Length: 199
Image (cartoon, rainbow, N blue to C red):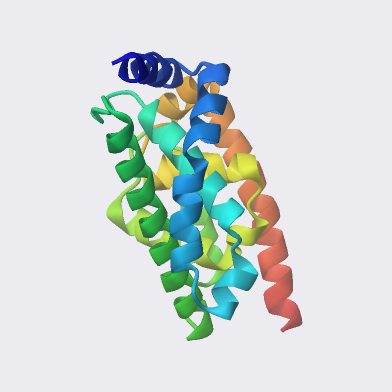
C-alpha cells in the first residue's frame, strides 16, 4: 500500500512537471524500456543506428510530452500500468524506426519542397496529408533534428497539438514555438537541398 501511495504521489508530480518526480520516474523505469530495446534491436544495421539508451530517451520524452498534454486520459494508477505503457511505446518506436530504415533503403524519399509542409503557421492541428508528408521527411532527416526540434515535431506531428497547446507545454507563446520550429526546419532544408545538389 505504501509503495502504491508513493507511486501515486510520483505520477502526480510527473503530470505537474515536477523535475524531481520526472527524474525519479526515469531512473525507476528506464530498464524496462531498455529491455525491450535490447530484445527488438536485432539487426546489425539497427544496432549501429540506434542504441538502447537512444530508445529510452525517445520513449521517455514522448511519454512526458503526451502525459502532460492537456486532455490526456491515461489512468496510470499502478506501476504495472506504467510499465506496460512504456514497453508498448518502446515496441512502437522501434517498429517505426525499422519501417523508416526500410523505406530509406528502398529509395523512398521526398522532394525538398516537402519540408515546407512541416512549418504550418496556422494554429490548427495538422491535416492527415501534412502528417504523412512530415513523417516521410523525418525518416530521412531525423538525424539532423536537434533535441528541441524533435520535441516540437513530436508535439506537433505525433500528438497533433496546436501551437497554442505547444506554447503552454514550453512555457512560451505558441508563435515563438512556431518560429523556433520554422528556423530549425529552414536550416535542415538548406542542408538537405545542398546534399541533393552534391549527389
